[in-house]
Image (tube, rainbow, N blue to C red; front, top):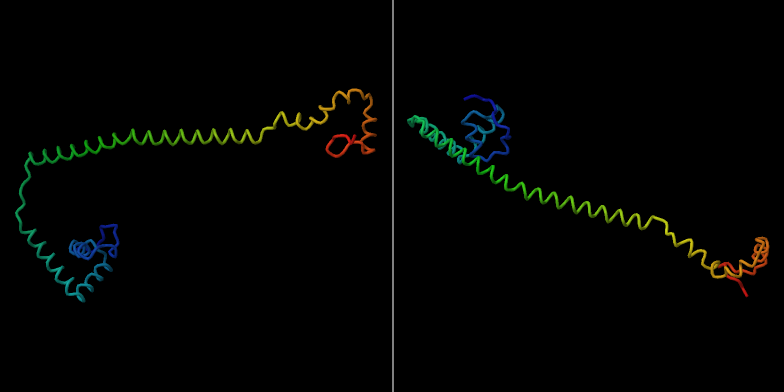
Length: 171
């Protein structure tokens, strides 16, 4: 038996029967083979399972090998081709569903981005009516204020406390 490891699966991850088969096939490295031998030496059930598998191996080696004719090869290849065609058909049927899913995700994302952009512009752009609302007290008294020729006169009135802090006059 060759003591090289052909499998990428660690021996600890193999179930006991598969581990014994790998041992009989010579697929385990030296350390793993030693571990199996210790397990067989200490466990009667493992020892019996190993004997059973060895007898099966011997029986399989005694069987005559039937020659494979061209018809068998052809029918096997046809079955493989048919299975591959079915797999391809299933894959192609799933493509439109995936495309619809991605299209829906894309449209939903674009809609969310548009709503977020609109909301951001709405909140951050200056309100052109804000200045009019701030100037409303002056506009209400515009007729009276047009009568005044000098800005210094208004400053003197403000300094004298004629206007309160909200911009309206006391009188």
